[in-house]
Amino acid sequence: MAQTKRKRRTKHRGTPVGNVEARGRTGRKPTDAETRKNARQSRLDKPPTWNSAFLKSALMASVLFVLTRIGLFGEETSIGQSIIISAFALLLYTPAAYLTDRWVYQRNQRRKAAAKR
Image 1 (cartoon, rainbow, N blue to C red):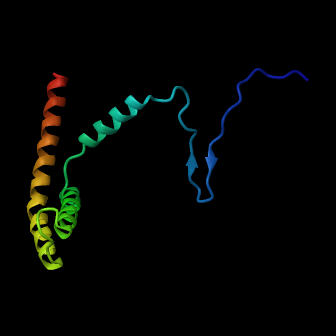
Image 2: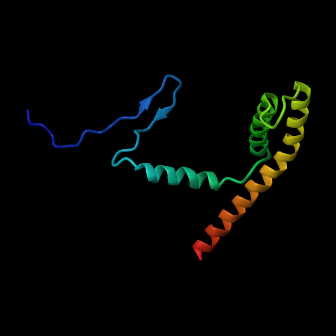
Image 3: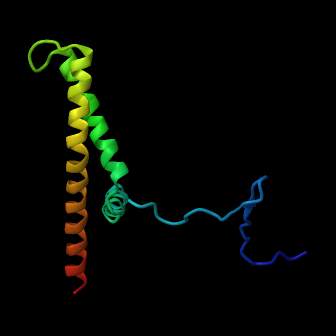
């Protein structure tokens, strides 16, 4: 029996839940520079949120707590003093982080609008 010259078709794979997954990307894999550029660009296209600003400031306040606790800025402080300093820093850092993120976002949006002209 003669064989046909038709190309073999790839099938969709179904999962037990019922989702159908299409075949992945075929062809050349993107280089590291291409993937980094796309990831950075998509991150800059998202508007800032108070939640992300709070998480950034919480991270910095926890670093400040550790640094004041081990006495990097002079003598060791008690836990209560370190908590008060960190809470005060959290209150200051959150709006500062949000305003900085908003400034970067708006600057990026202006650059994109100027590039389209």
